[in-house]
Every structure is written in C-alpha cells, then in structure tokens.
Length: 499
Image 1: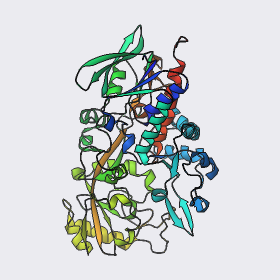
Image 2: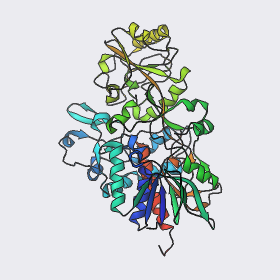
Image 3: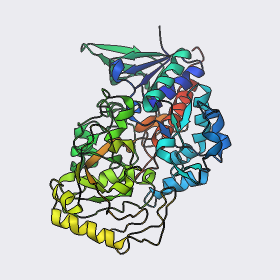
C-alpha cells in the first residue's frame, strides 16, 4: 500500500498528527525506529497529565472516562482560565513576551482535548497527585486536573488505537536516516531497518514527530553545555535529535532556547535512561519532586533553591537543572515523619534510595558526599526560622515561611523535628529539550527567511519557541497534541488533489 504522508515517530505528538491527517482522508504511514515494545517515544514514560484552559468543572465532563465517578460531587476542580495559563507560561519566559507558539498552545488547548476525547481518548481526575482533601471536599490545586487512563502508556495505546481505526499504519524498527527531496520538495525518507538494510519510503510529505535531542550526550554537550552530559534521561533512549539534524541539513531555521530543557530532580542512582521494563505506574517513581515538603541541601550542606517558591507543578521542571549546577551535580532531600503521608508514591517506591535516622545529627552524618556539620547547621537554622503563626496548608500557597534565610523559603515550611528522619539522594534528570525548529500555522518547517520547506512538517518536542526557562507541569503533552493536530491537518491540506 502506498502512503500520502509519512510520520516519523510514534509518541503523542506524532500519533496526533497521524490521526488528524487520516481524519482528512490522507493515507498515513507512521515509522518508529524502536521495536514495538519500545515504541511511543517519551509518552510512555510520562504520568499522562495534560494541562489546558477551562472555565469550570462543566468543561471537563465530556473528557472523563467515568463521568459517574462517585467522587465527582464532592470534587472542586476550580477553574484554569486561558489568562492564567498565559500568565503561567510568561512566568518562565525570563521577560520574553508570550511567543506565537505559546499563544497557540493556550488558545487551542481545550479544543484539542475535546478533539482527543472525540477519538475515544479519555481522561481521569488526578486525585492522588493533584488534590488534597479539605473540609470534606477534594480540592484540586495548580491548574492540573486530568491525566490519561493508565497514564502515558494508556495515552499511547488509546491514540494508537484511534489511528488504526482511522486507517493509519505503523511500522516498527524503521529509523529515518535522511529526507528524500525531489524538485525542491520533501518526498519521503530513507530509513534503516533493524537488520541494517535501508529502504526508500516515498510520499507527498513528511511530518517529523520524533522528539528532541535529550538522549544524545553529544548533542546535549554541543547545544546545551558540558554540565548537561551528566544528566539522567527520564524517557526513551531513542530521542537522539535525528529529525532535528535532518531538517537543519535541509536549511531549516533553529528556533527556541537550545540551552533550555525540562529538567527534574531524579533518584541519583537510577539508570542513565528511563526503564520500560518496570510497571508503567512505577516509571515516574524515579522522580523526586516533593522537595517543597522538606529541605534540599548540596554537597556543601547548604540550601540552594526556595523549595516552597511555588506549587511543585511550577518548579520541578527547573529544579533538576538547579541540582546539576551544584558541586558534584547532586543533592539530598530531607524530610521528617510529619510529611510521610503527603509524600508521593515515588518516595515509597521499592527502588527508592534513601537513608534514615532517629536524629537529625545522625541523618546528616549519613549524607554521602555532604559536609555533615554544615548540613546540620542548615537544618537548625531552617527550623529556627519557621513561622509557626501561619497554618500549614498544602492546597494553597500558604505563606508559611522560614524567615530571613538565603535563599528564602516562601511556603509550606515545617520544622524537621519529628523522627524518623529520611533523606533521598537526587541528581538532575532531563525530560525533553526546548530548542528545535520553527513552524508556521500549518505546521510546515520554516527556513531562516520564514519560507516553508515544501513537504516538511513538524510537531512535538522538535518545535521550538513553546517553552523557555521552564514550564507549568502537564503542558508538554498538551503541546504535543496541539502541534501534532496542526501538523496533521496542514500536511493533509498540502496534498495534491489527485490524492
């Protein structure tokens, strides 16, 4: 069977592009360089959460897998307006105005979620990680409410099923190596099979949805800096920048912040890449993002970030880089027993590394690589600075500070005074890169003069200009869906009438 369009990659963005193009009647072939059990790009490694603008709980009803869930009547989803989404993105822009890509992300987020639901991709409230019970109500915080059923694996499987229902095809073990160009138009790809042989796959256009360059140590060094070589990769080992390099070779413009990335504190002793061999619900458990409930110290025994600056949805994608900037590129997160019930499952994960002691003195002595005396001084100074007059409330930015410290501690400060005490070693983990390609309103890849490269489209992590110095959690999958849908529609519209 011949194809009209080839989509490179099989993650969320690529599958959304393939679904959208198939919806418009295009014959779509998705090629994935990984074997079938490793397909799905970074999507399978995520918790499946998607951030989008909504005005109230009624906007969520059509998206829900179980609209009769008995918890819904006592759930307060609040609202997450388009303006709040824009403000949250601007918060990470380092003074830059909202980019055109960000404006599209916000403006098309809800309609894209409804579009996915129309293809039977449904979602569940994230009760376990995004709500706290308060006065008998389940109160959501931070603007992030829904995730795909069975998290990232479930999202991949639901989108793959939608593509297959629409008539699309997927071939695994085919790695795109170069773009075929005829008469100035991209007409397919040369792909390498698992046995090393190559094949030319022809089509009227190609959509690059094969991720960023976070899994290439060499490209991280070249584009981002030497310190990024040591980062653990949260997701697939296959996102090595292949699509980006192929497009740049054709004269595509670089776009976005190449030195930036989604970088999260991760278990210091995890493997270099994410692990699909463990149950999908456990893959996120190498993350360590409850620092806002404790204290984080570096090798010098000093705090180096405001652990309570904001909800962790707004800081976790930056604090991995903060850890990489520390001596030895590691830190320890310290907690006491008061927070045990609030710590996410990742801290109780069977493979979580930690040390435990009955006194803070003994705990600090167990922090490998840390100046124990300085760490003890840091904890004592923190404890003495906690504002006891302000109630602790994890459902809001409660203003409970540790006063007079550098760096400050703005919210959720509680003394570490209740044994047993635990500490978890962390390093920086990279999820995806921010630098990529520039695309137009049809998803076409642009040259430096803003002219499109005929027949070449892009979506997902490879699109630059969406994120800069960080992002509000859950925006990445939404961005993939928004720009995937755009690329699929744009590519389908570019086909010749004979198609």
